Structures are given as C-alpha cells and as structure tokens.
Image 1: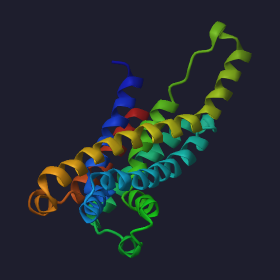
Image 2 (image 1 turned 180 degrees about the vertical axis):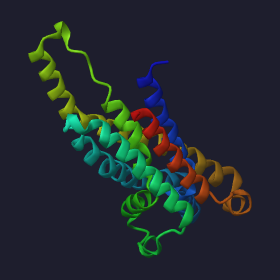
Image 3 (image 1 turned 90 degrees about the horizontal axis):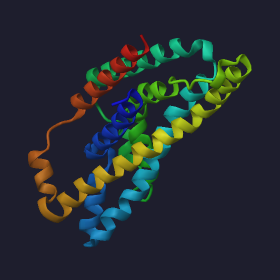
Image 4 (image 1 turned 30 degrees about the vertical axis):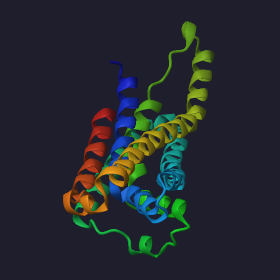
Amino acid sequence: MSSTTALWLSIVAIGAWHGLNPAMGWPLAVANGLTERRGRAVFATLLPLGAGHLAAMAVALVPFSWLLGYLSWRHAIQLAAGALVVLYGVYKLVQPRHPRALARIRPTQLAWWSFLAASAHGAGLMLVPFMLGLCAQEPHAPGGLAAAHATVMDQLARSSVGIALAVAALHTLATLLAAAIAAWAVYRYLGLSYVSRAWFNLDRVWAGSLVVAGAAGIVGAL
C-alpha cells in the first residue's frame, strides 16, 4: 500500500471515528426521530450536523494549506502543526469539559452547533497532520527541466487548498455514514436508554486520539 493510499484511508477512518463519537451530535438525530416518530427525521437531522462538521474541517485545514505555499517553510510547518495537535490533545486530557456555550444554542441551529462542537473538540486539528502529509508529496516534473520544476512547485502550492477541501469532504462523508449507522441502530433497535447504560465516557479517548494524530504528524515530518 502506498503512503498516499494510507493517508486517505486514515482520513476515512478518522471520519468514521468522528461519526461514532456521540459528542459530534448523532444523539440529537435520534432524539429528533423519537420526537417526530419518523425515521426520516433521524437522517434529516444529520444533514445540518454534517454541514457544520464540514465547515469546521475546512476552517481548520485551509489556513494550513495556505501556509504550505511557503515551500521553504514546509518542514517547519509540518512539525509545528503536529506539535499543536499534541498540545491540544494534552489540554483536552487535563480539561475535558465541554464548552457551556454549546448548551445554549437553539435546536434550530444544528449546523452552527455542529460547527462549534467540532471546533471545540479539535476535530479539524486531528486531520491537519494527514492533510499536510498529502500536500507534501510533491509530483516529479517531466524531463527534469528547471522551468518545468518551478511550474510544478507553483501548481503544488496552489493545489494545497484543493487537497484540504477534498480531505474535508471525504472525511465528512465518512463521518455522516458512521453517524447514520449509529443513530439508526439506536433509534430503531437499541433506544436512548441503551446509550446511557452502555456508552462509556469518550473524552479521554478523544484527547488521546489527538495526541496520537499529532505525534504521527511529527514522525512523518522527520
């Protein structure tokens, strides 16, 4: 398996992990389905949650992709991004509380809630090392000509934003699929009472995931 394939698969796996995590919002979809007594309401609720998650991913990833335009700083940017993700993970280990502001958002503002929840949990930051790894894989210029090489480098710098948006989109699709499976299983078969009885606290696991993602970015940049 190539390193590029491994990075894309990691992005999909992280998306599935985000979707299964109840902190990203799928219990809200279950509650809405139970309130309206319609299965369609479960999936309808997931759409604004997915939109907010996508926006949060893009806001976190695109600024780092712009920074990669400074090709001479690329290595330092990768190391700094990895260190930032590790530090945020450590912070979440020490301070796992959820922001109180999330509880004050009206139910009609699901996309806004999802955006803030994903941002507060550092969900976008978790993807940064993998996105940077994809952007750092430079194509080879044909013929080895200096002019062609300069053109390729220029295109690479400008295409980093496209890679960031592609990462955000693929990741969000995986998140929505996993969230839909979890929400439907709880709505149709298990019930919300099962979640309160059987689900364990994922805050420390989530924080550990941030630390692992950041460490992977640092190792990949060395």
